Image (cartoon, rainbow, N blue to C red; front, side):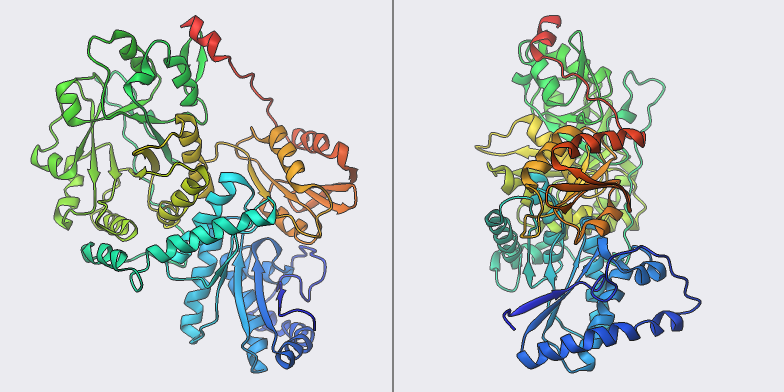
Length: 580
């Protein structure tokens, strides 16, 4: 009686406490027959909402599907959609239409596919109910904003979504700004209300969009293979799970700066020599090179190349200032005109496509056989549509060259950059189109190489491509939380953040806890004031641990399942500099 809107979760509204019990249905008739108890439980609520003119959100959550739905559809986007539709059917049977849908998940790919499937199903049924968008338990900081932007920004670009919520493990007031910015970004790309956006979209050449929104399949570019005569291993210049290429400048390579640059690029060092690590930049991009007689800077560059780091340089720079074993970057138009002829010393070709090229020119990439494509869209074109057109042409011509998104940013604020990348590049990666990211600063920006490298890896991890650090699923603060969520999450990240491939869920209460464990390897869930339960997957393995002991207990639990590795001692840059 006292509220204007309620939310029901189809996964636990009538099922009670989540039990993960597996049920066997011989036929769809058997599955549908069990809906009877849902109708019985739901009708009184629907009738009251109708009588009082209250709104309802039918909010499906990937982490808390009912055992009934899990048994029939599995832990899938289709199961999420069917779970919501059957509750909507009950509402409609009573001529009650004052409801909205949400399809939340902590995995942006699952979230995007679920909403797209729901929208498709509503088109089929002739329905038109509002959609509330959100990536649940997104986390905090740039990672939380990035993950939210990947999911929400992608759907807003599809024209889907009426309201949004950015769910951060931060004080609630900090959720407003990213919500508002995502809405503003979507508005700026809307042709119906923005003449500039309309002009950019109309400037993109016509193409047929053949994406299958009911499934996710990633286009995986074919990595270059080392030729016998080559002195460096070009196969290491890119990563099959997604590459991060860092933009650097010549002064960074000086004898005094090189040890710091190695660290910024994520290299390990031993006696001053760099070695690739799990989150080292795969290649570097340089618009200008050190002078040929700058032997110290050239040596710093050569040492990176010797351990499998590609150096990508515009062809016109290499023609003036050759570098042995460099990758020459040309515009596609130039590369076609030169038939792919490389400058002196260059080992491989990379081509830049800006979206203005005609279909026949883009198809010629196959004949040029470059080691990579950089997708750097002309500012007069719609970045989203021009990129999708490029990938459609590549697909139609069976071109499997790795494609790196080259994103130029003028932003000087880290949260804004996370939202930009998640929205503009994440929307393409969630289509399965793209093999990596190159972020280049333009104008008066001051991000460090280290920050941009980590941001690139965060984007790839948020799009479920390449894991280079622990994945955290953490809920937003609310009145149910039984411990200091922000402080505890920070402690857990400090203790376990160095475990790539491991997912840890931090839940402030039991409401979503057990369900969200389905998306995590380990779970840390508040159950009583001052007490925590620990989970391995869906199973609670330790109960009622005092808060003060729980983080250490989580570490021991991870160790007991063989998924722990000790933190490596960070090298002091000064020592590396002395050794060099």
